[in-house]
Image 1 (tube, one colour):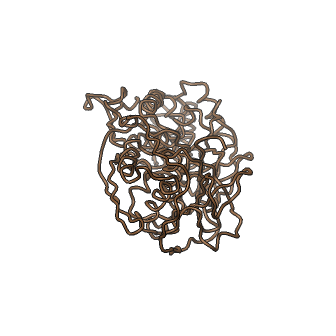
Image 2 (tube, rainbow, N blue to C red):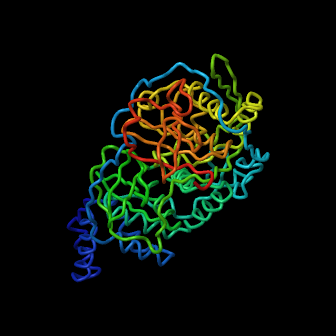
Image 3 (cartoon, one colour):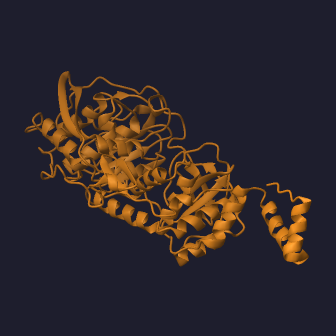
Length: 492
């Protein structure tokens, strides 16, 4: 800003107000010039006149003004220690002597719509035109108003001060109506923590087109929802880190006060972040990726047909699935194996598969039924490693493995384990080696086996094409597993 005072202008000021008043005017002008620009001056003026409506927010803003600390960011370990084989062994399928009692599928009662919304959620607004924003969240239309003053918040300048400026302005708005709306929708849609994250991020990006400002608003909401989080700056960009007790594979993370924090940005360029060193008041919830029950998304029902062969005979399995649920699962980060191995499948899909298979399994013994499920998983999908199919590691839910035409070892273990546990009420194990995943089942027959908690589990490898239960890939028989994950239907 350049202001020139002409001599006659100065003379007039002296005549009107005297020399003392002129000195005051020059001091005021100097304070503006020190700001460097109007853009830098404006946030300072907002902070002077805008205050938070919430004491917790005010205390948090004070924390943001403290000295920040630099933390190293590293990429977490990969699912496997070594590259997975591009081709797996196979054997000629031969029928073994049937063993065990005659068993049938344990198919649950008809609850086809248990994970599908039958009507719009309560929080959904019918008159969308009366709202500021509406979004499509996996098939559910949501609408909301933007609180007055919220969009005035901006990340300027692009440093710690800019973060303070953003929170001073945004926390002075009635942003809690957004957090309450998110809670209401989350309950109606039965969202887990990951679902809440996706919903919050979707709403934030509708309010703020700038990705850094959207990330800052994510933090504002998750603070209010009492999640332990950190905002970090790296090369002037904003990253949000969530405290988690379990590992997320191949994901940027840092260690703060002895706790692991992960970023869902998956950026490979972060090496360090600067952040404050305290929590928002009572924000002590760790982020949990477990998916114990499925979200209740609207119906987008589609049909898929799978074919496979057993002992030279071809079978066809037809089932229905909800595309909205698959879209949700496709966004999932690389959580630990327990998340995928213990997550449910859409009951509609499971029943379709069970009823389709059941007609081929009348009056057969246990080993024949289990082999039928095993051969289905081995043969209905082409083996393909993730780096080729997805250009990254991607462990899939059972629902996803059914959908994709290609899958690799851990995906098939997830699907096979789920089918055996749910349909036959049999405990299974997920067994990880340095570059392979297989499974084992708790049944009293002979064959390749592994001990777990002093109990014998029989190997059943969903990727060893043509192999029956009790026959594992030879090169893994003498190796000790790196990890065993129990998928239990009943006590062992």
